[in-house]
Image (cartoon, rainbow, N blue to C red; front, side):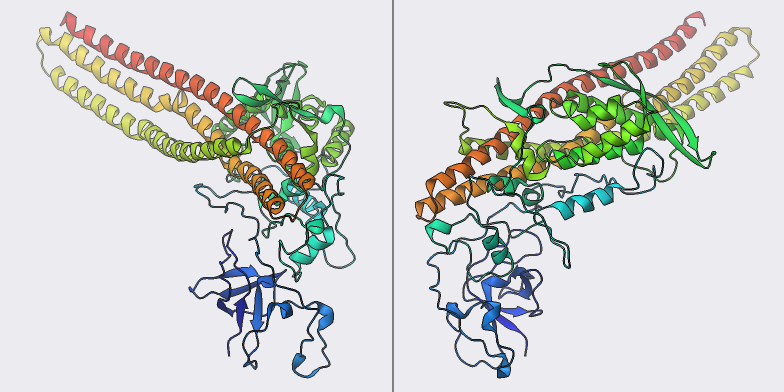
Length: 604
């Protein structure tokens, strides 16, 4: 007989792979063995997926009686006696069923309207893919980005290893009285679902999806008051009120950095080759050389440290053809765009890791390693990062969370449409450039060849008065050949630059779903805490602490959205002006060639 289970409470699926349950619904189980508190089965509607083990009761095959009362559900381990026949369960102390079991915290699903799935760094960029630039020289440790992510995961409060290893926890702040034991108990199949506690021990429920960006970023731990640490003055990130709302405080010492002269270099007596780029920051004037892998290391550190900031993506790696001139030129342009966005961001530009990357002398290996270790041991990451955010205080400084939610929803719709538009424009521009390089050039060369054949035909005419016509037609053929060459060269002048910009913004747009998830998750915690206060299950002071910390995340999110709008207008205005200027110059050159051919017929 197939294993079956009865749903004790309603459960609403929040993520792909999960299924929803209705109270008293009978489900078919794929296995009675749970996986970290989750079971797999099929509900009455035929949907197959995962659901919390603590929300159902397994129906034994030999049990002919009606379903037992809720007090026998999910008994503690000590109520099971393996020596009794048929593994009889000894009833625990009766627990009255909760009057209302609030559903688990509702986080927007990963595919909530975005045409792209959120990824650790967004987009298709994977720091550890390929063999573009190995990490095997004296500049760096033997670790890779994959190792760094493993280290981050093992140090996260929600990651646990079996065996002798232990997992660390964020220290509880004085603003929150959350119980780590109750948290662990619920995740491991604690008999009391969320909301069944008394007022003195009521807590806001935690995400069942422990892999959501809200949890992995430390946003959940921060909102629930578990983050604690000492923030130095130099680590503070200030958000101020600007004309358009919250914005990052401007960098008092703005600068830019050029990327020039990519050169091929070797090591191990020529056995290994790589490309080094010359960087010249304007605030130091001292040039340094960096390989792509150094950019990759920096990107990994920044993406880890700043969960609510859109760190621009690097140009993608390429396994073959890394030393071809076209690829090197394209990568340099992509890195130049990346560097421009880094220097333009008020927070990223002042980050210690970025400054170390720009200023550490290329030949000082010891200084590089010391700065690298400092960046990798930075304690202000995860939940502690949010402690570094300083927001306006005083009367009227608090944000209206309902208005914040409306603004974020509007931005979400904007980024979705912009992502679709950039993908379409990128495809169209790429196809148009391909036609110019191949099709248009070929057609103009055909026309030129045809005019040349006509000229050769007129040459057979031995009349003297036809010489001028022959020369004019031959010149027209040459003009069409030249125009074909202009078409083939033109994409490098205009369309390539547009596509480089679109690629950079596709990376930004891939970052924002995770940023929005964090802010949405914080808002949901506030709503849940308010509901607990209304039901008398939570103290007002505790709920106010959650709202205050959500306010900090909201300030940072709106500041990042404001910055994105600013650079978006700046970049697309500049790029569209450049594109149209190049188009005008191109058609002026075409017109000039045609006019020169036309003048040849005046003397015929």
